[in-house]
Length: 240
Image 1 (cartoon, one colour):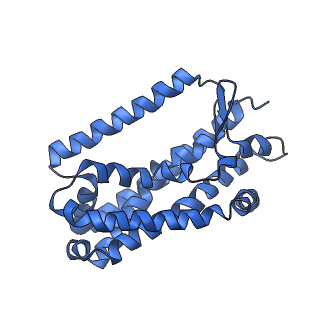
Image 2: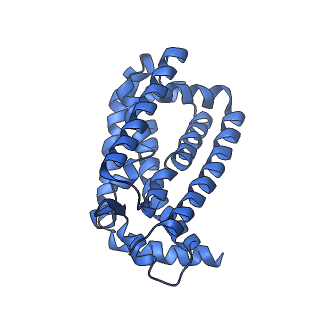
Image 3: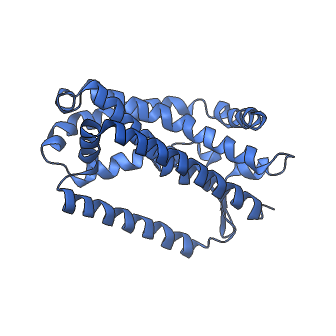
């Protein structure tokens, strides 16, 4: 518990310094929510790739891109580090505290943004309410919040940076992730004849308990996996 209280104090340092950024996050979230309000009726009739990709980004990488530029990853030679992590590594605190503080910051951006998008999308889209009753909507939210943990957690852990990633390696890694993601989405469309948003709507409607159990389990596993990976990186990276 002491580690969490320490982590919260360090996370608040960044969050307070970025308080004006949250106004932009709210505006951006409302805008994105209404973009789905306008596109969702057509999507429910015939799912399309772009909406799925955008939705996935909003529940993963987008939270990192929305952070204040002063706290985003910075290049140092061929390496990339979070300025906050470099600062915290100079203090007499454990890697566990640093890692937890990074996840607190990630969730401080992710949860409000994603909640605003989901609520806006649901309240102002009658067509979505027709296929997704309130109980199922809650299940749908749990599925995607969990996704934000077990997939989006990689972006929280990325604050640790690396002392091995050359620009070419970074380019290859990012390109590979994009290609793999595109292939997975393509297979979903090919096998299920629908998009990933629509697929999670079906799961939320037809298998609510199973969906929640699997989602929560994946979120717990994902959190501890990325948390431990970040601690390993913090211990193995030269920040000086």
